[in-house]
Image (cartoon, rainbow, N blue to C red; front, side, top):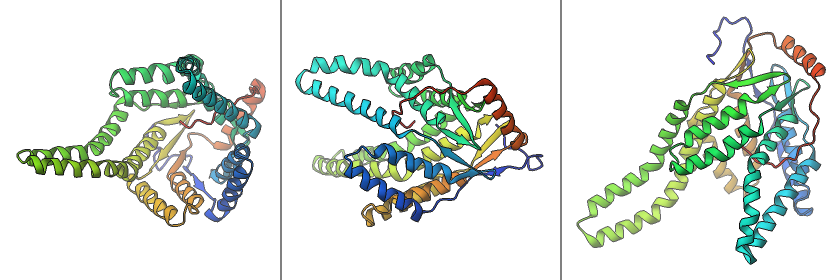
Length: 348
């Protein structure tokens, strides 16, 4: 969706994050202590407190988001995940064939699990007192989470960007605010262009190693020593390069691509995340986390959230007040789905 012109009758609404590192640090440290003391049981309540803090401090058009997740449902989902993991590891240790028997139904159920995760997160999210929802069908989940990963493997990852585009299309085209559907128009080509740059950055160290090998090919001793040094340096350089350059670039470009082509009925969105700024924030956050032995982590989370949220705008196509009132009327008439969901806690 193209950004609205400056003369649009409904001015853009900027997103903002109002939280502070000091406030979140108090929540974070209590969550950490209670999670350790309760041997992980409190982690479900910790997740709800964390998400409520970030949701309630994210605002647009003079209203905050909210999160209504049920800690008991989250705990149930985590217990299911732990039991399945324990069963698989136990079977793998004593009966490898039995481990395969356990793994097959889990793999077959994975698309349903991921769909449940999407339904849970949106069902318990709201803005101006109105819930979001995810209405993607199970057939679509099996296509996105089972068929496409297999195609990516068979294509030696060449279909990876296309899978990413299909995943975002499944997520956004099946998301609703009240009774109005989100939609996304991002094409496959845009995803391939982003991943082509990522591949170029990741391959640069390998190309450098190949050039060095060509220069040393006539001297066996120098070649052996050179290749040993390259092997020792290449791995950490690749990891650091991914964290400092590739990941910020990928996150920034994907966020901008997805939200600049997403609409909610007559309303559009704009995202202006800078890969360079994201890399700077990530690098300095990492240094400060190391120097403070991890105590800077809540401040880092707030700093990153503040920047990414501040880069977002809502481009209204109609009056927001009238739009929300109409959505509430439609939902009241239609009735909300109140089924209980298990939060599998899988981020997409």
